Image (cartoon, rainbow, N blue to C red; front, side, top):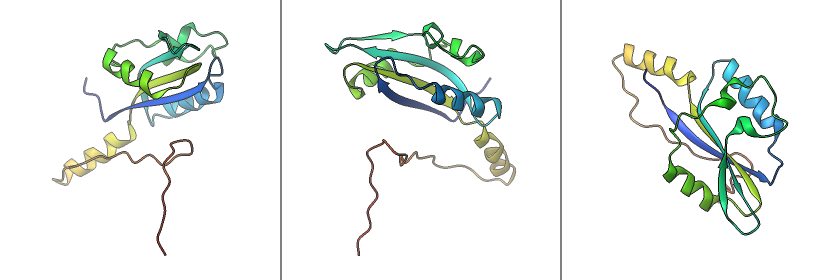
Length: 138
């Protein structure tokens, strides 16, 4: 089965404060068919900076009906995890989610049916917390 387009999203939280609302929102978007969670892992860093991975389904207090929380496809690689470890602070939980943008498949089909081609997909972070500031000159 073909996958794609895929995006690896990393979210960080203070230690042991992985936001239940985030998981609920991911679940709602998954159930609506807008995206599919392809792989998911949690990386925990301690006060000394050491990191370990934890399966999301092994975290206490997880909502019980998140079927995708049990995923461990291995598509998030060791190299990805090394990058995650460099991105997050000490005493932090990082949620790494590999997402398939299913909504884009319909659009890509329409483009192909019109003899067109999607020549580029570029993610431009702009959500709060990304540290990206757009400015204008006057």
